[in-house]
Length: 304
Ligand SMILES: [Zn+2]
Image 1 (cartoon, helix red, strand yellow):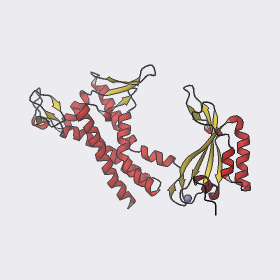
Image 2 (cartoon, rainbow, N blue to C red):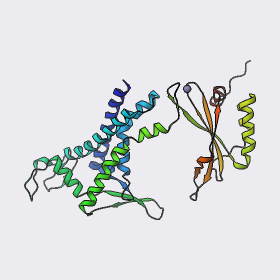
Image 3 (cartoon, rainbow, N blue to C red):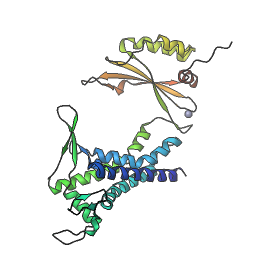
Image 4 (spheres, rainbow, N blue to C red):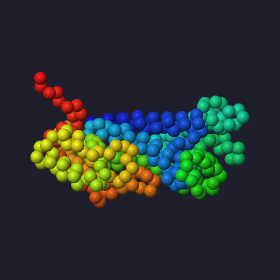
C-alpha cells in the first residue's frame, strides 16, 4: 500500500520536475537540469533527480518507515523517467518560427514537420537529442575569488566532451533520485514506534563551562532535579556564536519520547563557520520523563 502511494506521489513529483525544467528552458532559456559546478559536478541533475524521487521518500517520511532497496529502485526508475521526460518535453515543445528560430513557446510549427537541410532526415526525438548534445550550451557556476557565483555560458566545446557531460548528467539524475533516501537513512529512527526522531538544539556552552554543565546535567538525569531549573542556570551562548563550543542537541521520538542527548564539539573553520569534531561526540540516553519536561515549552499552570 505504502509503495503504491509512493509510486503515485513519485510520479507526481517527477511530472512537476519535468514541467519545471521544461518551463525554465521555455521562459528563461536556462537548462537548469544541465547545470554543473566546476565543470563536473552535475548539481542541476542531482537536484532534478532528487525532486523526481522525493515523492517516494516523502511518503516514507510521513509514515515513519525506513527506505528499503525497493524504494531506492523505484526512485532511480523515476529519476530515469524524469530525465527522459525532460528531453521528451523539450522535443514536444520545440517549435520553429518562420524565420527558423527554435522556441519552446509553441510559436510556429512543431519541429517534427522539419527535416535537416544537409541529410533531408526528419527531426525525430532521437535526432533531436543527438542535436541537443552536440550543440549543448550548458552553463556552469563557479566562484570567482570567493565572490558571488557567476553564470558563464559554455559553448563550442568538442562533441566528445559534450557526450561525457551528457553521461555525467544521466548519472547525476540517477544518483540524485536517491538523495531523499540517503537523508532518511541518516535520520535517527525509533524502531519501536516506527517514527522518525526529532532533533532539537537545546543550548551551547563554551568549552570552559562544559565540565560544570555536564555535571549539573547529570544531576537532572540521575537525581530528578527539574530540567526547567537546570536550564535557567546554564551559561548558554547567545547567537551569533564566535568561539569554539559544545552544542547540546536532543533527539527524541515524537511518540514514546524516548531519546538521547548529543554533545557535539564544534570547531571553528577558517571561514568562520563551525564544524563538528565527530570523534568527540558524546551520547547520553534520556528518559522519556526528561524529554517531556524539555519539550513542553509552556510550564504547567500552578494549581489554584
Ligand atoms: Zn518511539
